[in-house]
Every structure is written in structure tokens, then in C-alpha cells.
Image 1 (cartoon, one colour):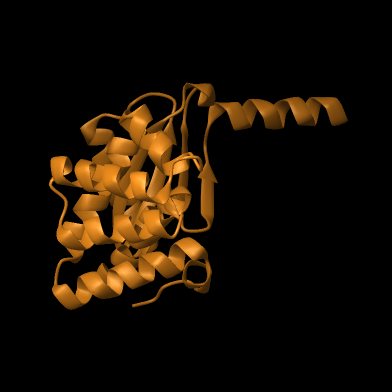
Image 2 (cartoon, rainbow, N blue to C red):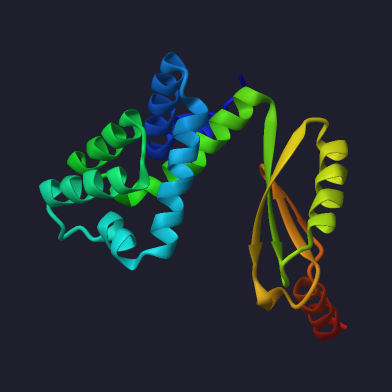
Length: 185
């Protein structure tokens, strides 16, 4: 399993690595990954959950109690519940989004996968996503998992990030390049 040194040395990476090791020992990596997806969705959809993870004025005990309640409602595994409790006690909840990304990267590396972050101006159809996934799999030589996001400011086209490589085919970037070329001419 190849995990970048940047992930391992960052705070989020250290916590994610520890969680991954515990999940591997317990054989629950996919369950924990699913739990983290639920937590991320809750943070994105619920202002209260977002505030719970970002507001430093919430006491450790209150944050831990609230997370235990939310964990029970979401049906998270005991390992994930304990992990969130440790984050609350250590005041590391603000780093949770980075920990989730790092955990996904570690789990994907272990499975021989790579995640491609795809940003488009409009939601892509299933056939477009499948075509893109096929092309990226051929290019990367390993299984590609797509993470999609919509950004209307792109105007059109795509921005694809695979690891540290960024492929920018957006109309916004092309227009900016054209404007820069016209200014320097």
C-alpha cells in the first residue's frame, strides 16, 4: 500500500492512518468508510452539525455528547463513534473534513484505486460519468473512483484532479487565458 508522505505527516493524515489501522484490524474498513460518508453528508446538510465541528466555543463534553447522539441516529459503528469522541475530547473536530479525505485516500490506495475529483458547470449524466471513468482508468492504469461537484462559474467544460495532477478544460480558464493573451499582445 502506497500512501503519500504528505498524508502521513499531516495532523489529519495521522488520525486517518490510526483509524484505518484500527479498522483494518477489525475488518471494518468499508463500514468505517461508509460511516465517514454519512458524517460528511451530515456536515454538508446540517448547519448544526457543521457548527458542532467548527465552533470552538462548544465544550468538549457537549460536543462529545452531541456526536454520540448524532452517531446513534446515523447508525455509525462503534469504532467510528469512538473516533468522533476522541476528536471531540482532543478538540480536533475542525480537522474532520481533512481526516475523511485522508482516510478515503488511504483506503483507496490499499484497494489499488485512485479518486478523481471532477468539477463541472452542469451535473453530468450517467453515460458521461461512465465515459469519463473509462478514459481516466485507461490513463491512470488503475481503478478510478469519481467524486463529482458542480460549479456554475466554470461556464462549461470540466476540471479533473487526480492526485496532484489537474486537467483544466473549463471555458472559464480558456477565456481567462485568451484575455491574458490579448492584454500582452
